[in-house]
Amino acid sequence: MLSDEKRRALRVAKRLEVKFNSSVENTAITNDLSENGMFIATCKGMDPGKTIDIKLQLPSSKALLIKGKVIRNIKTAPGRSEKAPKGMGVELISPPADYIDYIQSLT
Image (cartoon, rainbow, N blue to C red):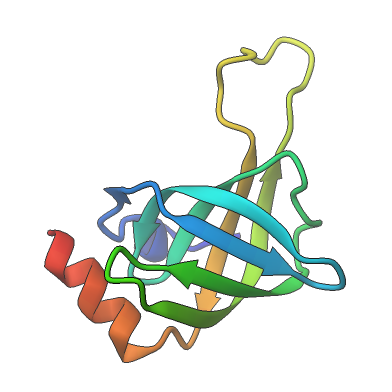
């Protein structure tokens, strides 16, 4: 689980196309981004602890390749609102400088 310090990283609401895989490529949309993680809205979330490859499509048409570790997978559960976001929280592993620069440009 993310430490309190990491969870306090400034999150920016941003919808960008993302492709992720561990064995099969899936396409989804981000809900929010931070310098050390992102929330990917998807019904095809991976199990916590799983390492995934992420291809993030920036508005500049540049695609970034990033490794991430699934921290949580949120599915609809009894008593949970159908409107609540489904997807997975991903901690980024050594995000590239271009990604950090992009996040900083949004704040």
